[in-house]
Amino acid sequence: MRADAVARRYARAIFQLAEEQGSIDAVANALASTAALLEDAPVARALTGPLPREQKQRLLRSISDNVGAPPAFRDLLLLLSERGRLRHLGAIREVFDALVDRRRGRTRARVRSAAPLTPDLLAELTRVFGALTGKQVLAEVTVDPELLAGAIVEIDGRVYDGSLRTQLAKLRQRMASGS
Image (cartoon, rainbow, N blue to C red; front, side, top):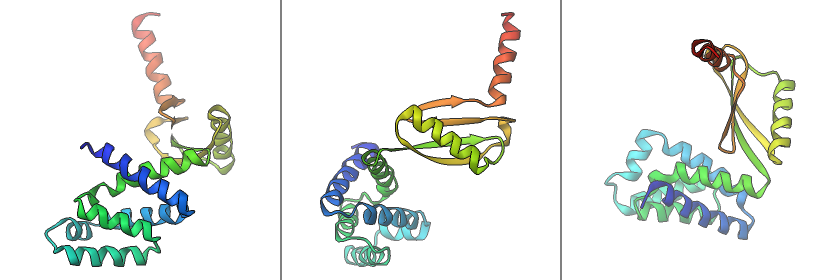
């Protein structure tokens, strides 16, 4: 089974269970903390390596307790370990977060700007794209000086490129073609 299909299947299942139990926020927090922990190479090796099943389960229960996870999340970790799918936890988290966002009327935007955005400019940007999408926009901003000026916004599978670098490239192309 493809990795994205695995992630969608488990994320939907844990989302539905968390929704029924009223623990969406707790599961989201546990997913974020545990996925970050599994990015640590020694921890990932221990949990995906040839460690005996009982030791893996003890370690996963300990991790679950330390991140304050609800029982449903602990059971998910144990099931993923049992089926050799712990490596998919990061992807499961991404799908789960998207399901939470959809349920709450939010969308995420990746914003690359040539310079750091002021709080006012960021608020205006999220307001404009919120009006465009009809959702609350959560922006993740990175600075990319190679853009020269302006910004590139990726949201809901679309790219809005207002960078000077792109505008100059388009101008160069028009001048070269003589139009």
